[in-house]
Image 1: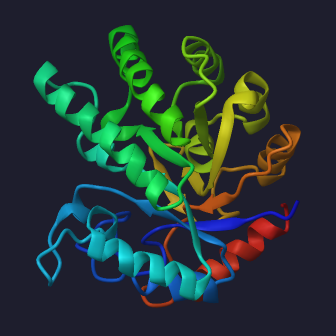
Image 2: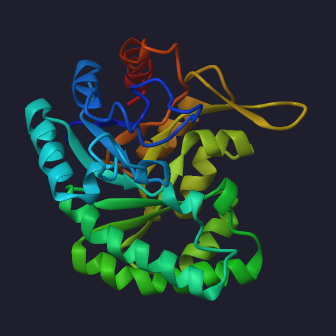
Length: 285
């Protein structure tokens, strides 16, 4: 089976309003031909609060929320032969499912449930749910809260054939234990090489702990600074050990695509920069 390679939406355009990662309100259309030019197979589509802003026509900028937008979206996919197999739910970093009132949590949960059939409509078979940074899971109470939220969402996911992929920063043992509490086949892990390297984790140890639950892979490189903190860097220049990364990926017979969620290069040189990052990945996989 041949490998497929994708890009996190927004990486093929200069950042908007100083945002390192966001839905590209002004350039989402142009990213389809740019993805093709870079040699990619798919775009991992972003849904975030920024994308809910209005465009020049007065509709929500992200086209997946209107019939007119979807018609344009479908046409661009067909024209450039670029798939959209994943929806990245960064909205849930802007508006976390935890640390809010019960009424507000109900509203946010409804949004997740409403998003699942939209993912199906755009051809996505997974929604990535980030529980890192602003939405990081802290302590047992929040773990129980997230487990309850997921158990309510999973029947909707199963009905629509859309998996929920968790992105979290648990250590390998804790993540494996957490996953055992939700043994549902539609709940999987989105594993990120940059998050892993930035936390000092070893990929082969993570995959040994919960590899059977890994459903998708993000590739980036982060440098773990000696004085503390992390910095996203071009692939091969951070703390990630890519021999170990791809040994781990191969250890589970992974056949899904890998999404480049890499550092940014110079503005307006995105296609050439991504070509170089893709060539780096292809040395290993």
